Image 1 (spheres, helix red, strand yellow):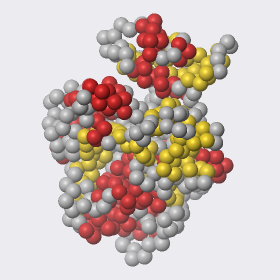
Image 2: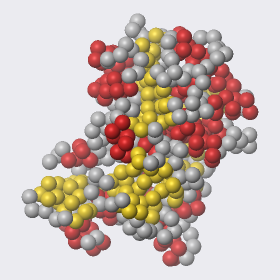
Image 3: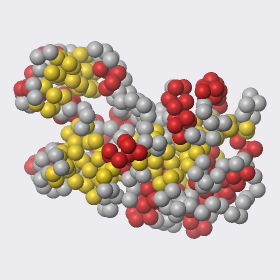
Image 4: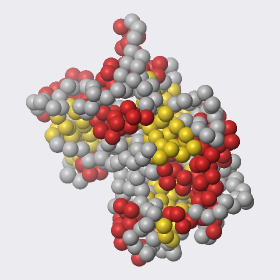
Length: 512
């Protein structure tokens, strides 16, 4: 099944319902499906054949959403590019994917033109802008042709999207998701619902698997999708109030910004019913404050990665209800630091030294489901190293408790080895964040002649805090084994992060 068929199904069931809202332009499901047909026909007339890669680069827009479905309908493969990427990264993604077409927003024309000479393939340039300033660009409207009655037949295992990872630890990797990867979760967990009147705010970027999942799930269920170009807390509040948003997805950094924004108390948030969060570890103090200040909102911690195709485990709204006896509340607070339980249809096991680990024992998290990636584009060796007999090696370390909740313990390649002891930076970070004087932190290993590595923590102080290095080392020593405490605390003003709030530890290591 081609994933674009999910749009056509909903268009038949509820043609007049509003599908997308962007800049107060409302598009119905029937109109969206019709325009997707026109754009797909245009791409085909330009020579886009099944399997051809079509890249695009822009902030979120309704035109980008139409293009994603159109590329699939034409049999092509979408290549979303991070709009915060540098020119060298864009050049790599285009060359690695072998894209023959790129559709670009006006703010990125100059950057793309600067690398055209380094692109190996002949590249057709299309502008999302109606009247591009340069003749190098084909206007978006020019690709819209008369509806084609025949579109390529797509196999469910054909590639649909190549999502390039952020490249925080090296060159980007092209994660290939098939049509089956995308539709498996949709067809097995949701359905077009005439009774569903939810209004969803899309603030996550469409070059990220979370943004794509929000798009596909919202469209297939027949929700109204309000599109935010990119996250800004002030505009987020305005959109929530104006469109009576009921559901949204945020990364922890976004949620923290919302809670700290002065608009929080001045905005009517009564329509909001569900906030899903993920993509980075959620500090316990942030989620507990959100639960306290938004008592009418349910929360879901959705855990996944680009390679897993979508969410593989979740902490449910019920897990976020902090009531009961003292011991029950303590247990729930502990579980808030987990990623919840595996979703239906997702097999998870904890593996170490070719052995399945018992509950409570740490190992690498392996995942098996129909939604995981097909592999890395142009890298069979790397693909074979992470997928074995259908099991995806996630690279995340963790354990499962006796009740089935999964707790993360860092990355397989992120452990610090001090004097022969393996130490999880994640564990040390969680302890540091328990201190009131710590706003943000990141822990790395620093080479040391005696110990091999020592633990160094970068810390941003909470506002008004006078916490010292000795205070934090003593705090860690009281909670952790002595060898796990940081040897150095370095106070900094800002933390290097990528577009989704993940801390760039390689940039911190460069300080040494």
